Length: 442
Image (tube, rainbow, N blue to C red):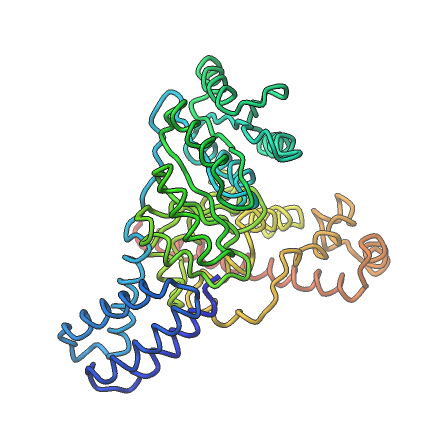
């Protein structure tokens, strides 16, 4: 989401490239460009102005080491200030209580209902919670049904009262039901409007008073820019919420809301939504986001996403198969499935330092594996486990069955064979090295 801002900041820092030291003149030139970049990214003017003033104060107060170039020093200062601007340190969600109650708030269309499901799934899988979703949007057509569909998808119970039009009593009854039925977490999806109005505010305020939630999250569509900041301010004045959720960060947004909202309402951004899939939710780490804005990548988040899909027993089984050169198409498909579960492919690639900028104009389709999966799906079980038996006639049948060409089938088989040989060679080399070490010890 911060591609344009990242590019603009990179160009700003070029002013300092080759400079022997930081001076008031070159800092002023650089920060003039930085401020313009922030404003173009839809950051609040007062915040952008204060940000550059803080950076200037720190830059002019730095004793630049001989081993550190001015450009690198300025990048570090801007990085630290960006991190502070977005909150500095991670602020975790409050899950105390029996059950813990989370109240979702925000405008209609901000993504509250979908995010409620994502949060339930995340806290169920990562924190071992037994969540229950509560349908308190009694106005929007099909809102209750949408939540039920999401609940079925993530295997989480949904509490609703179809004949009750009072959100407060629904919420109170839901909390009692959860307590009696072993749910240690209740997530309440509330109604929204297209704009802030008194009826909606009174209702969500009444819900807060009636159920006294441990956590109130304000969900906002990041694509609405400065309107998101203004809406956050109005909700916070009435609810004094605990944290902000930014949704649709995968869209064509300039990102200014994320940089402004923390300062304006003085409440932390706790989560971000990055797509439609139920897995497309991330805990918000200000320092990691600063890394990504400045093109440094986010390897820690990438590793964490990989670890979520990592199964130690499965990894051992796969390692043995690779060592015996028995890696087959069933294993290949399983690996593709794990990669897809990690999230948006372009977003994942952008977490690798230096890659984000390189692929910004490259269209990476999330359906990139579709053709490969179709080809493998057209193979017989025997062909998937023993690719070597796939002769010319079998290739023609596979191509016809998968709706692809014979060239695409040949290409996949060749790439698979090369990959398998490389994996086997690496595995053999490791084994050989350990074996020699063992012989020397004995």
